[in-house]
Amino acid sequence: MSKFRFLVLALIVCSVTVVGTASAQTPPQANPPTRIASAEQEKKLTKRVAPIYPKEAFDAKLTGVITLETTIGVDGKVTNVRLIGKGEDLLVKAAMTAVKQWVYKPTKDKETGKPIEVVTIVQLNFKVGE
Image 1 (cartoon, rainbow, N blue to C red):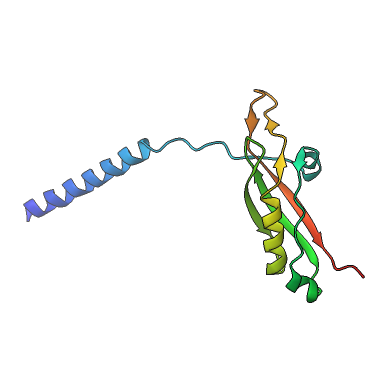
Image 2: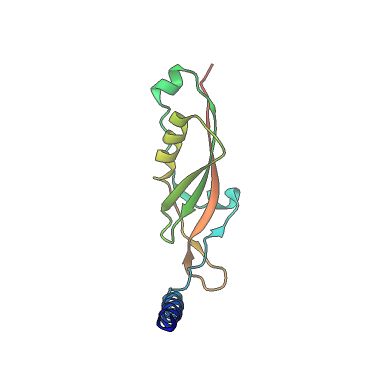
């Protein structure tokens, strides 16, 4: 029975050591993107691609405002788009397809002057003309 207790204790010590070693080698987390107000970031927009109103949505007279959280990389290109709230699937897809093609003048860190990744909110309004 004493050999069994020793073996269990040895396994516990080894597993703690392995976990401790693994976490010590985990690379540090990168800084999260800086949040920028929509109006401020819109001034830096250099290429805007208009969304294409899907025919099915137009025929069904689907309308709405699609709100997207948009991540912009250090090169000014959109790297990620995420829906905030709700929206008709056809309109959401059209909005995301367009915004993913947008390009901004890179935002620079105020202290270092180096380009930084930013997050902003973009809204696209889909409405059927009368």
